[in-house]
Length: 83
View 1 (cartoon, rainbow, N blue to C red):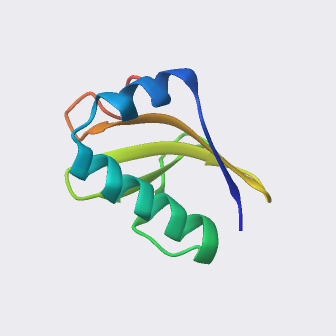
View 2 (tube, rainbow, N blue to C red):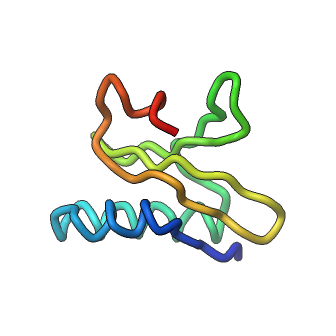
């Protein structure tokens, strides 16, 4: 199992989400950390990945033991350009 770390920005974004969205995102991140399964895609031209959880996106980077969430929020036209 990989360790999940939230950046300061991602932590604030996560806390601002509705309770049901936080639960779904948390479950999806845990599932990916344990099994490597999820709707994951590497972002074009970047080293980051995205996890799709309904209409929310988690932008993250990872290594062998750690997942670092850098952005959590709704999918908008600016979601991938801000980080």
